[in-house]
Image (cartoon, rainbow, N blue to C red; front, top):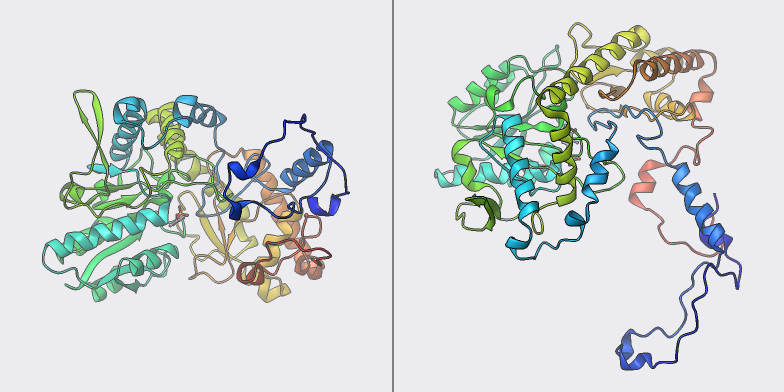
Length: 483
Ligand SMILES: *Cc1c(COP(=O)(O)O)cnc(C)c1O
């Protein structure tokens, strides 16, 4: 596809301004800021602009276009009602520095969202400030550090299972701790034995994802949290998979002390296009005093932002976090209600198990003896061995058939991993169509492996060198540039 600069023809215009009276720009703008030459902009008609950007939008893949089973990311459908409500001028036209008495509605919404999230997770208090899951993790780890420091020893180590999301050890390191790995057992669950070996007085916390990134429920979680508490450590829940637990069990009941939420995953607000996220962090009991400031406090129906929390870890984000994401999550929770949220989890689990069974023996499934939660992981080792076709080839071929690929090569403990999360918003028809397509691709792998090695064939761009695209991105257009 051509870029807009390549469509440019000298003298073409989209819109002509009426002539305005001469005025001396030097009177308004200091000399150093005035351009000497006109900028080199594309010259195109309005029709061309409209078509160009529409074509770009159509080249994009998104949840409103098709199935998006990207494991761990929870790419569920985002109800348009939430967008509509978040666009309310009363929310979009306010400024974070406005006097509190003029933004009572916004503060009330935030406070109520905090209370709803506390209730859902079985926590005592929540801060909405962190901007995403990873930012919530860091807030959590800083709370862990503050808690132990005030007890006299910050301790040194935070334990993380070998199936953990990469942000976990990263957050641990940023908070000044050493991340140490706890092994999974052959069932794909935390090895309690290995945990016991690693637990001692230097362990500040254990960071757990439940259901874990294999989509399996950590059935020994209560024993695990007890063990960590016995040595004075805290237990942190990476709550990215909370959509599997909603209304069924609360993290607080499993012994977790701190949890982060991904509003942009569990609570159905758009993400994946680099848009804003929101990763509130919830805590139990005595940890409340460490939450980021400002906190929203209510007194006789009046809401205030208070910095009067001397033990707080401080700020995690400018102002109060990504407010409009909070509005969408708040709307979603209220529309779903208690029963609706439980149904979300039940349907997410049902869809994942249906797909897991249907996919059956096409791939290797190291954990097939146990039912999964909202997602599952299979391995493409069999296809690699038999036909020399790798998981990456399968993922790329899926694009040709109009599906987004699942997450691949994660979690790291499964070779040639495909991590599939259908979410609760997909129909049986869609899941069946996905299974049929996978079958077709496995047949192709046998008959014509090169077709897969060179896939995708009919997407706007072919197979990209993803390493180079990340390490040396070319973001500036140059004349006669070759791409
Ligand atoms: C998405 C995810 C994260 C990170 O959350 P972000 O909002 O992307 O920062 C952490 N852990 C797990 C298991 C996740 O799926």
